[in-house]
Image (cartoon, rainbow, N blue to C red; front, top):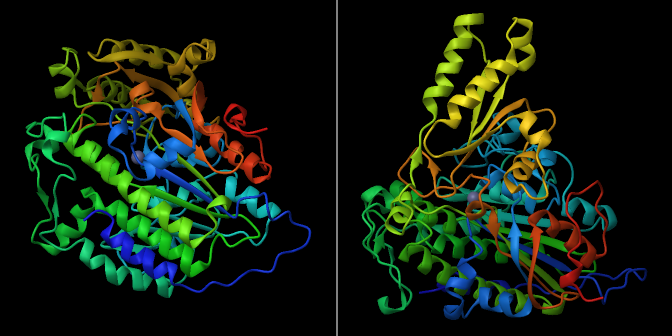
Length: 531
Ligand SMILES: [Zn+2]
């Protein structure tokens, strides 16, 4: 049943207390939003919204109808991964400025501050995040403002609110939790919510098609999907409870559960009653899980997006009943897109689509260095084609780093599937207006990261690894995302001008009437605004 869990929680939320905050006379309480709702759909490609638009009846339909829809929006950086993308959505700045350059180093925190409450799991906090975000700008003007950020993923919950010590929750080991960076104990409303999570991860719960199978053009039985296991509907949670608690993350209703937690939080924290603008950030992770497992061309992703539309519809309808809809400002985007399975690309005309292996030249270069100067951390491969080197350390050992870099770049350019290999020199000389790949690498690398080699693959290729669909390239498949803003001050319509996700935060700030507290890379999207 679509939205069944959400509806129950929404009803409980609607019946909650209704206290009216005192309004300071200095505020113009009629024009600013009192609730800013930002939704990040993890791994949502921009073309999903067009492909199945005619089947939308819920939240996506509503936002496409009422919003300013920017059809050429890009996460304009390399390493199109979850952590860099989530640090971008509400900061107005690229990874080169936020310092969040890859997934593994995004929010991991092994210190005491990273320890999770009540459950085991990897420690997490925003300690690596640099600078401010939209919520900091709001709070600077409205000290009473509060934020709630929720996601299935730690990085999806943490990074949209930067370093702010607000209410931030994510799903780990079968429950929603947070870390000691934010709180010393879980609030009662989250504990109560967790008691209801058990039903969502019940063994045997099934994912069937939402509509009749005739409504889906995509074939269901593609044997490469999900590494050759469980690639045909229905998908069923396993009998083992631990396995079911983990696999619920690939099920559509994980998004419903995340939205239900958000709605519960709005109610219990009394967010959005004004007069100040509060922030609700929600990152929905199932599209990412389904996209990796089944690919962007699968029947499963089609069904997931339809269900996401229904869940978002129930969520927005509930919010509109809880609070004054005219005072809610909504935005939606994604942290990155995804590239098709190479198997799918080969079957659809791109005979050269492949998984690329470049370990050989990198390992050979590292071994040569070790032989020359002894063991040491001379090189670090950060993933998705980004390689750093200890230039200073190697230089003091008498190594000509430029020649090492040039030789390795030449070897990597011979690897099948490698489109280009950039160095600091090639990026410095690039025309960033016309060369999107160079621009995306430059937008990724902070000045203090010793990046030496930036490897980009052919558009339909992915790095080797697990048998799944992947993202992470500075390609349009991985960078092109939806961007929609809906609310007072927005002029509904479709806008095809090329824009960047870093434009979102300054545009929201403009609509709220606050000012960025630092230099941002984005600009206000005035074309989609009423003036
Ligand atoms: Zn992601």
